[in-house]
Length: 305
Image 1 (cartoon, rainbow, N blue to C red):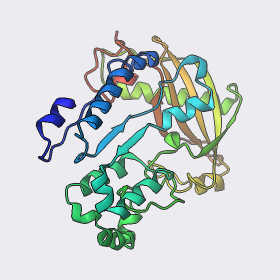
Image 2 (cartoon, rainbow, N blue to C red):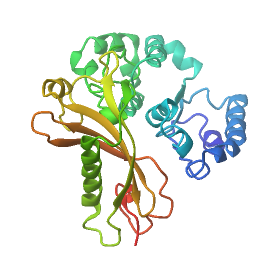
Image 3 (tube, rainbow, N blue to C red):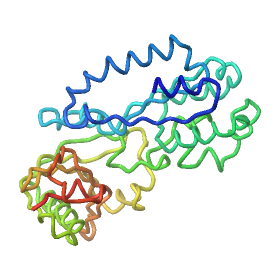
């Protein structure tokens, strides 16, 4: 990062660095990266190499879940709230005060990487972030009502997870109430999740078909301040679920062999008993267990023979 900034002090450049080696497998290892990151940031600041540069630091999720905090509220939030730090040079702040103010205010609102993408797209054409253009764009509902809204624009403080394109399983704006793991509907849902996982890898003979080890926990999902209302990613309408006397719950299961742990959002229709999946994610590290699988999207579900 330092070498790139020094090489292009007066020319536009784009540089992306991805670091996961130290922290991906064990959270504690990330402390060894902190001195290096701090040293680089101090150097860039001291040499004034950020005077013409916007610096963005972000993650794809928070701290990896561990067995001892798996059921905690902290783990629930860590999985859904990655970090995002954006540093603007002073000359940008002076030239584009309205865009800067909107960015600062949006730090307290529901935002996603879709919005970061739109913000970066704006940087390719800085006429889009002039005060005049920001005011014009803020009045266009076709822009401000989209799933992806530039962070330089004012984002609706009442934005919902559905409007932001966030599935309920990934929505932090929900309340959860613990339920019994022995309920018949829960056991049925757990097997439904397992069948879904096995269906994903059925065409890959190098992967073992998984079995249910146990149901680790289940939560009935509610809505905080209406933030999750609307349609889910797969077209599930929360109001329609309520009208059908159904349940929307988050279920955790562990599988064997391998001890993989998964969380899934499942809808139970109270009228016909139909189950619908609205998202599934692995919450344990798979390490080398999936080395035989080349498809990155399927690695979390594969345990190699």
